[in-house]
Length: 367
Image 1 (cartoon, rainbow, N blue to C red):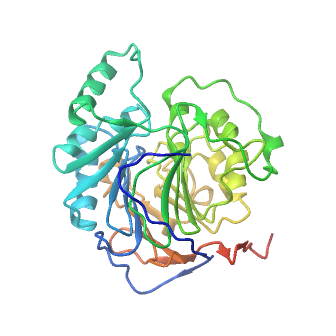
Image 2 (image 1 turned 90 degrees about the vertical axis):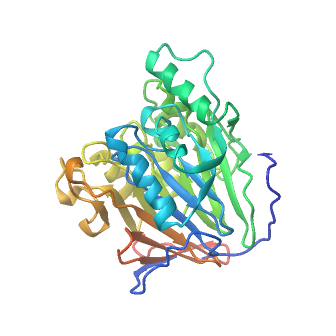
């Protein structure tokens, strides 16, 4: 594991704990050193954009949504950064891969808020034979002052850590994955390879974010065969509390051998009204043994209600032209033992406990 030295980290072990129930009291939205780990899933209509604010107040913007559209995604990101999380700058930007809906909007964001450090999977050499990409990557190089740093599988982003310890560990990138060490994956035999994905999705940076025993898995747009490479025949990731459904909920990704191996308690899908939220993926998620709640950034307007998340767990139900761009927030308590999921600034938070108690996993009694 390669630690990229930037900030000194402090680490102390701590034991954490799961269960789900709504809570009536509102969740504070302070973002600066409030003692919690806050995750804001920002609506970019089927693109990718996540703001992380650590317990010590550092911030990480993972992907930046679509460009254009009247600066729709730029303004939604800035609203969360400045008005909701109360940040005056962003410490780190991570571009998971080189697709339009993940990195091209970053210069527009950076023109409005200071970003100190830039990370990516490495700029391709040679560049794809795509004139638009050449201009897009030139704009990216300009905003990063040509000083972005490459992340690889095994790297740890240099974030300050307290107690319980926090770590943002990159587990895949550029089609490479961390060593396949760990307990056998009981679902490994179910993998059925698909044709090789030659797009940049398969090169996505993926990370496991932990605070104490709370675990959040983010695999960007990683696709089927690399997902299997990561968790077969062994599972080095273990089981997670929170899972961002991969690739906006498209069936090119979300291989059951990964989804069922990490067995999330809560899943959040960053889909759009017509992009992602595929019924095959929702069926896979519903078959995860420990899943307690599936949230969607958008209702899939082409699916009946009973084939997607419960209406109260969907942040935006309107078509794009009427969408309000409501975000989903996850907030992990200072002791790491509980976390809440809340839709928008005024939504009612639901309380969950981490799945670990004294090192043992709680399971639903129905399984």
